[in-house]
Image 1: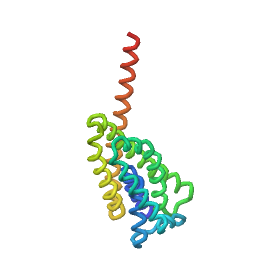
Image 2 (image 1 turned 180 degrees about the vertical axis):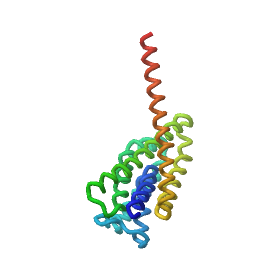
Image 3 (image 1 turned 180 degrees about the horizontal axis):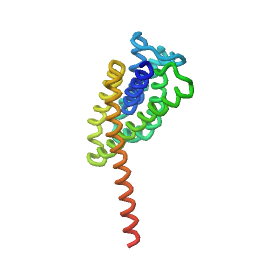
Image 4 (image 1 turned 45 degrees about the vertical axis):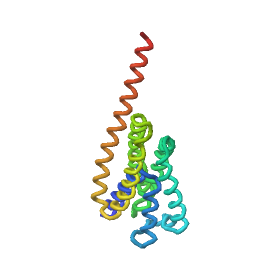
Length: 198
């Protein structure tokens, strides 16, 4: 049961990292400082005051950056690997009682994979918004993502089972979005290739 809670908590927090890299790190840090949660051994530094200062600064910069047209697209390009790292770190920090190899493999697959898929999916949505609204609609999308990251981070800590299942649904949704985007891109390339031959 303890394993399941750690994995589902990591799953929900990693999905939150897919929306904003540093928000879940800040939320868990504050929860730790308030004594509401505890990191597993070796990750106690994530609940320190220096970490609070770092995560707060990074969160402000990240959240603000997504309100600047086209800068948000630049942030998306680095957000995927950063969110995967943050998701892996958060998942690893809440999984306990496993061998180091299983611990890190699970953290990378569950945490890094989840955060990477969600982040890539939101990037696809933002590209669509930029193309259709000239970047003007991205403010709305950024606000939704900020809200989702904060709320999901808090709810993942309160009801990890529910949020874990919800996250699995989100993974399916964003996975379909990414696959469709790749199909559209491949079809466009094939069409251009056929046109160039004729």
